[in-house]
Image (cartoon, rainbow, N blue to C red; front, side, top):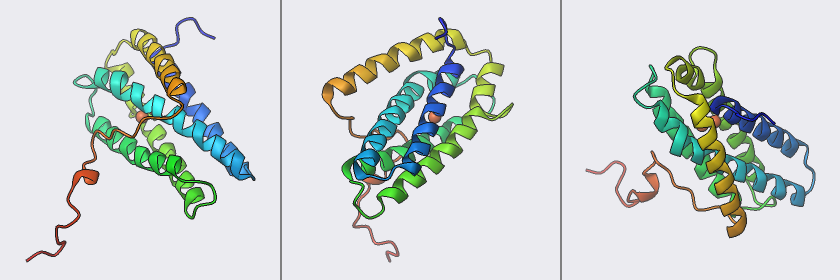
Length: 179
Ligand SMILES: [Fe+2]
Ligand SMILES: [Fe+2]
């Protein structure tokens, strides 16, 4: 393992790991195996999204050229969090379970592309803007270890905290075509 893994290398390694887990899910044949893989996918994604939102994204704010990339990243994370919460409460025998995993994998694939894209991606923009990737790498690594230990001790993941979605707080009683 590299002594000093920079932020982009660390986040990309996380992306590769989750891609492998999604591939394993595609091949999984038993409910137990599916459930275990989903547990691992959701843990990885929750830790990853948390360290990006706590450390990496704020470090990009005000520095990168295309700020819309950041806003979209938060919204994409929130979309993933809703699916993660659904999956953790669901079970492989439930209707839509496999579909939720598939849609989550597609959402993540799109999101990862937005982060990793050459020249226009978030990581490239951060690099171009002179964000201190070595320092951030250290902080991401420390926080990641902390979160993994915390979730392991709790034996479960925390409820999703969406930063950009408010839908769960909106009243459902407002008439759509009110007059
Ligand atoms: Fe990421
Ligand atoms: Fe992200």
